[in-house]
Image 1 (cartoon, one colour):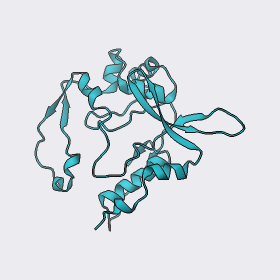
Image 2: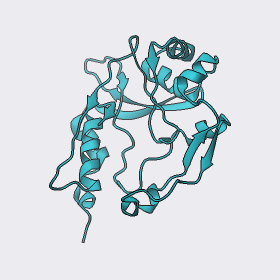
Image 3: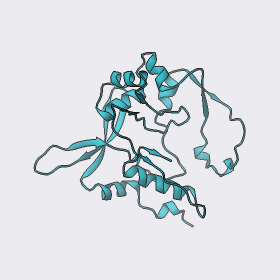
Image 4: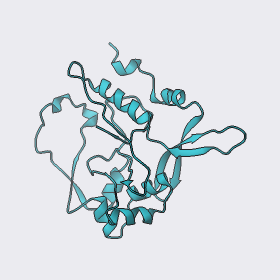
Length: 203
């Protein structure tokens, strides 16, 4: 029997349908590669490049997302893998491909900590390229407490973004869940639609 995901259109096909004059591109700068949406304009105008939140265009909910930030975190040398405290309730339902190492920091491993030390992290570079700023401007805003970059070391799959007064407005989507039926495929399906239409964070 085919899984529910097998009958769903791919995110790539939905992206093309939702944004018929757009293509997903990646912009490289410094040590990072940032996804953007390039919009083709009429009357000979040059294409417009905008912020894209749609995420990787893959369809297997059980494979998880690629660990974009794992190498960045490891390279800083201040985190280590630790043994899980024990099997959490319901852990037998988690697909093997989604079992990931638990990381712990030797001290503070927040973006604010690095910013106040004067370090420009790859997360800050990612935000800077995404929003059109210099990386050190992002670092300074975080160091002064005027912006935050939510980037938990145990979520290497997230694409860094900044929430702050001098940055683009961010959208939170509350997708909820059904008391009647709530499978992995159904919840991930809602998440994909939310990010496709511009949600930066999901609850």
